[in-house]
Image (cartoon, rainbow, N blue to C red; front, side, top):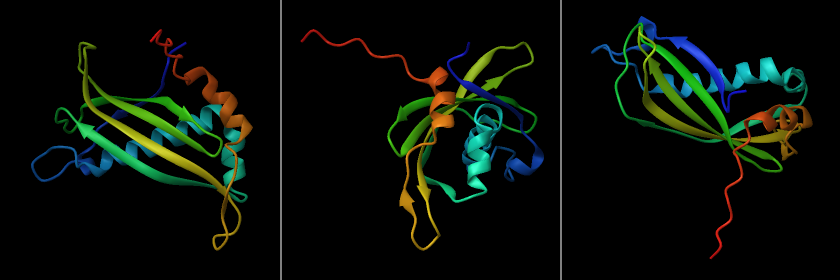
Length: 150
C-alpha cells in the first residue's frame, strides 16, 4: 500500500496565466480537490456529516514552488498525513509532474491544516476529528521516528 493518497490531474488552459504557466492559486485548489476525493473514497461518512452540522475550516495553507508547469502537463498530487490532533489534521502535498516516459519530477510541495467544528455559523465550537476519518487516515500516518539516545 502507498504511503500517500494520489489525485491525478492534467493541466487545462483555464489553469494557466497569460505567459502559459499554471497560476499559483490552482495548486491550492488541487489540495482541496485531493482532500475531497480522499473523503469520497475513504471516509464518505464524513461527507454525509458535512451536510449536517460538521464544518471543516482550513486554518493554514501554503505551497512552495520548485519548477514551472504548463498546459497539458500531467500531475500526481500526493497527499500524506503530517499530523493528527484531537480536533485538527495537517496534510502535506507533493506535486509531481509525470512526463510521457513516466519520469517524475517534484515541482511543488504544500501543507494544509484543517480544524473540525460543529454548531451554527454564529456559535461553532471545536469537535473531535470524526472516527471514520481517523480510521481512514491510519494507512497514511507518518512512520514513527526513532528516538534519540541522547
